Image (cartoon, rainbow, N blue to C red; front, side, top):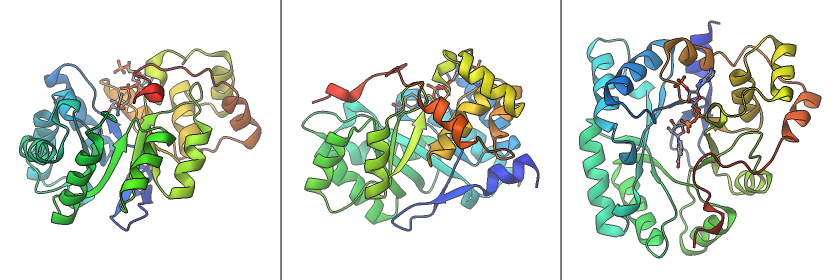
Length: 282
Ligand code: NAP
């Protein structure tokens, strides 16, 4: 099987039967719109079928254009793709969230979105927003719904007020921010955890343990970090704007990190947050 086939086939079923999510997705947090479209096209050519974008990234039109060109060229079918976007903080509340989703959907140019996430647990309004996401799923406008940057406390609160369990929680996760308690909680509740900033935004790719493990498997440090998250059962969404790295980040299905090496990587936790930290979000 080629690396591209392995990437396309590796899917994790969602607990509520709303399809399956490709285990390695392409993160699209790229500041320049032209570069975003170009990188998304490369990612699709390489075999990525899962694209992670957000209203906040101001890139839905570019990602949507790359998708529509690939579909137009006959190289990809819509059903193969898994497209995520997110509700931004200023759009919380029931009506506001419904309206924001419509705008995102229009910018993406898609008949439905595969996964819609609450980007951040905005205080007081998040429950109303969750109700809107449940309604969007009921209407079939999005297949799966979930949250992002929710801690165990935020998830507990959500589950206390709603019978609909989020399909996904997307959080910052890598060996330097190994969130074991959250992982166990999500496994128990059957919420799929997704790892953002899985490469520590490049800041720990020269860590001596990571380099040593990489040497053992003749893989790059980035591939080791992606594989580490996969072996913990997470969906992983690395970002790169460079074609050779986009390809490298997809080639993670032809090796397995041994249990002792996993333990060494597990022990690197230092509560490193490259992005925002939701621990104290009210
Ligand atoms: P990341 O994927 O951990 O790291 C991206 C950085 O690593 C870039 O600087 C990239 O540089 C570099 N890189 C990528 N592949 C590499 C490789 N093979 N070797 C060496 N360096 C490499 O960080 P991220 O973009 O923060 O996270 C990934 C995705 O998660 C985002 O794009 C976004 O979709 C999502 N995200 C979500 C949230 C949220 O709140 N839900 C927050 C942050 C991110 P080049 O581009 O120059 O290759």
